[in-house]
Length: 264
Image 1 (tube, rainbow, N blue to C red):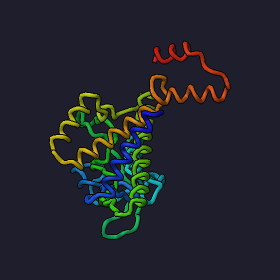
Image 2: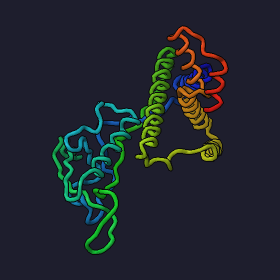
Image 3: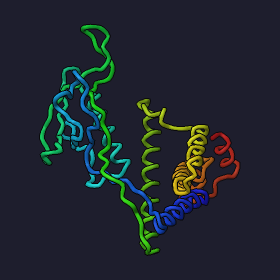
């Protein structure tokens, strides 16, 4: 588990330096709900019912976010759940949304009949159910984490590293579970080594030290989380062997370990 600890420690030290330094560490702030980002398309299901800036709090009575200050992962998950509720609406069915209008400040019920978005002919449509607007997490602002107190900086850096590690683990588990179940639609959002190298080159090309450091910290967190997976070839797998030996009070045969690791 030394590799996992080193990765997370490196990220912590980078965040600690940013928070205690002259610039600070930018951190996104989200509020509950999902925001309508654009005006509805002409002839779409939401045309005349939703407007840019509206915040959707729930779909069919189910809240999209449970926290008063959702994390980036929770905010993104809330948006995905709203899209899933729209997609799951049967033909001719309705989805009931609880919406906060910009000028009113209180929630009101809006009922929308989603439509399929691909017109095959004058009478036939196909494709997923949509309401015809662009949805975004309810992002409010960036707050700058900055303090001259080293103890407070350490606390903030620890919390930031913990939150980012949890978000990364949740995202990875969600992706793996969707991939296994065959319901994943986000494969194109996952970069391989070449994509990672390209992104790293773009970051280095900015010649912005803060951007490079934050990119290195994010990569280090990702490596730490992946390395902690309970797979034989990774640190998490080795820790699993140790836990198995502690529970059974018997040492696992070295050849068995090597065989399992070799297959993996």
